[in-house]
Length: 216
Image (cartoon, rainbow, N blue to C red; front, side, top):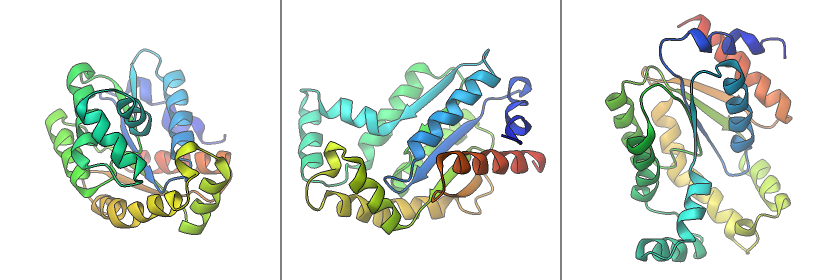
């Protein structure tokens, strides 16, 4: 990748860690892109730890438990309804409070999912004094996302109406979060065309990161 080192080569000499939020419709590939960036950051800055916070997996692990809260969350999931924001906030805030020392790179995958969660994350930014977190919005159309979700065969995409419900959540709950970040001076907002090959999407992310780094 021609511009790969323009952004990554400076990580090991940076005085503070980088923070990334990957956000987009279900099926847009944010998990794939987040993991590619995680891998490259770890190679470029092996002396600094990185925490990869993937809320989808954490939710699935949580609802498999036998606590009262887990059972309620499982019932909500089985009805194909959106979980309340306080659960997502608890999942990542509890992790940060217990593990974050202030020196690790952070990559949030699929967070935030609501405006309430966005504002809670903004509070974390102020509390931890994160410098210009990067918001990577992988933009895809609803029709494109539907085709991807219907073709991947995941368990929570198989029941009639599940995919439509998840895409409705995005329009109703996640779009306000994205709008919160756009033109927000406290963040570097990257809108990436997600309707490309995996490598093309990733290259666009790296090119955009190199550009904003140049003009910081």
